[in-house]
Amino acid sequence: MQATDNTPSRKKFLLWSAVLLGSATVFKFMTGKETKNNKSETVKMLTEDGRLVEIDKTMLATGGKKITNDELQKWIKK
Image (tube, rainbow, N blue to C red; front, side, top):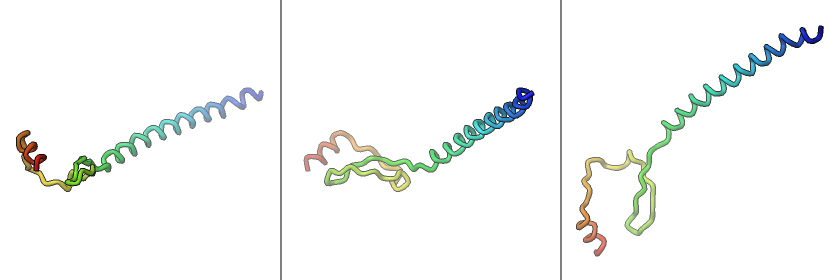
């Protein structure tokens, strides 16, 4: 008789385990997307004295043009 008494509790245990595991998985995916969106995008740049710094993309002015290789070489020779 003890075997029949344990069967419903075992089923309940397995059911609740599956529910908790599924909930944890869904919660992980929902919170994972929020942290990726909150991460700001940065750009690595060199300062005039040669230090490497990271700058937030929102702080940069848009619409700038790329310099040519000749302009870069002239700037380095200065």
